[in-house]
Image (cartoon, rainbow, N blue to C red; front, side):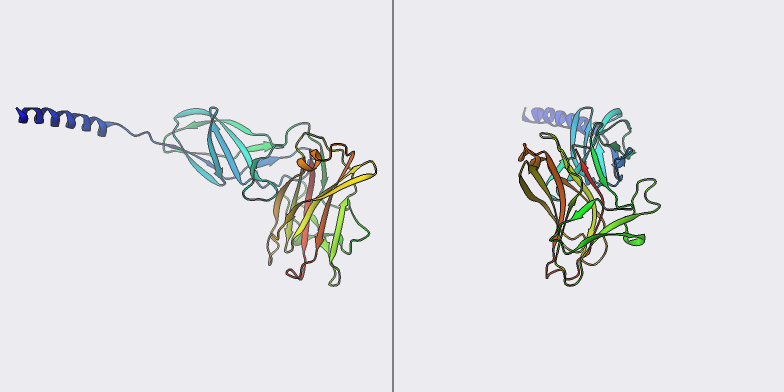
Length: 291
């Protein structure tokens, strides 16, 4: 009797085991994103960007955040709507990753086939209706040094200039450098333009830089006869030995919100020579105020 029940049990187990092994596992397709391409319109300045991650959503479901370049396994088959959102390091802080609020997202249909790789280069633009102030250092400099500043901004060209990817600009590049003599220790310059920045809307400063010395970007707000001034970010050297160009996005939104009665804003650049960095070289290009 016991052997009879054992035979039934073993038979049932083997049948179920065979059905388990007969099941076909779902094979993934792959989505590969190397980088974003930023398309700019007239008066929007350079197309340089520094998009470090991408957020991916498929048919309205968010898959997550992925460092670029990325190859992502996708359990999907057939055509799906895919949304790509550009992620930047706000204020240059690696732990402060945000969706850049001034860039549009990229939406496209992707045909997924198991084990095949779909290669996508998301193309994005700035949102419509934004205001731009740009300083590309092409022939003049729209920053003014303060009376206390010992250093000055001067134009450089050739190999010292930023190799701009924007069509029509890269053929004859020029940039600016903060020039300090050996006995000069302080530099301060702010935009000649006075901005009327919107309260309650995103406001950012973008710029390309190559530096072997820390420097600061800040903002000044004027309210009738009073003013507020604040260093927004300390930008660390991009390289202490080589001229390495980087791009940074600086959030000015909170500073504007803290000064709601201000009718004028300026953006400034400042540097105090440090003994730790004896020969300061700070190159700048493609400064934008976008809001």
